[in-house]
Length: 110
Image (tube, rainbow, N blue to C red):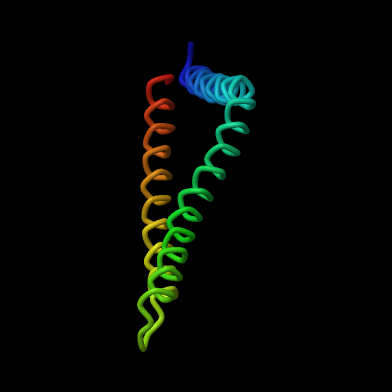
């Protein structure tokens, strides 16, 4: 085999490996489509509730405090914002945790 044939063979084997890797990724994506869709929908629900619940609880507590202990500033607004911030931190925690889990599963399957 001369040098030109060796280079051609090396290029073909590299191309073959790339095609094989792409096919494997495509097959893996097809197998996990249903799981990914349901996981994504579940994550949207989890994130929504993790923000909504603390926000509503903060507002409810603020309304109660304002009704029973009136003052110069609004506890409702302050606790609503505090609940919203707490909910966003909570949602960020869950999304980061799920992201780590997804990347770890991807590394384990490779």
